[in-house]
Image 1: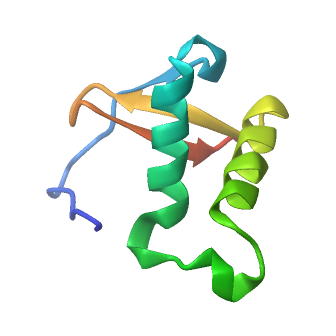
Image 2 (image 1 turned 90 degrees about the horizontal axis):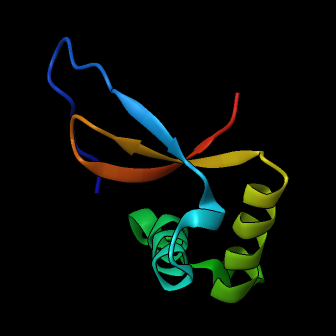
Length: 81
């Protein structure tokens, strides 16, 4: 579910090292991330566990990162720049 941000909204994000997040919390974050917007990975020929492993690998390779937004007080997985 996407939320529209108010005009003039500016994120104040802080990167959170994924390896400092409780493993169960990280698993839940990745699960929410890969199932966002009702994605059904079985249709793409892979399992939810496959997608979890892919995102975890991207975190390890620093292709994506966990960012905590101080304004909305939410965490998200985003592409690294």
